Length: 155
Image (cartoon, rainbow, N blue to C red; front, side, top):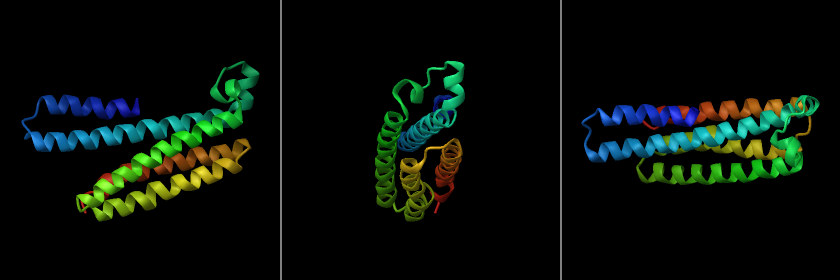
């Protein structure tokens, strides 16, 4: 939903606008990047929240990912999703540097990439509900950092 809302708003706006093709394509690329970022981080966070709630879900007979495939396999899936996210972030950072948006690239590294690296490291050490809750909160802050990249992109 978080990713789809952004795309839907742009589709509605884009169809009714008279933007030059170059500007429309540029905005479309930004919207797609933000949507992918929103989707991946939301997915990461939802999986972490399932890990946080595994005991209650198990008692209720829920079939969440950590219950179905186990905590260790779920952790491996989070590593893979984090690697994909990091790869796309690095690609975005390179594109920002090529378009002379060095401040935005630096912001992306400080507010998103480094906290995501910390998330991956902390994920390997997390085993309790409280630790998974902290990871979920960290992912919220990473989302905010990603959104604020739009502001940093103006510099």
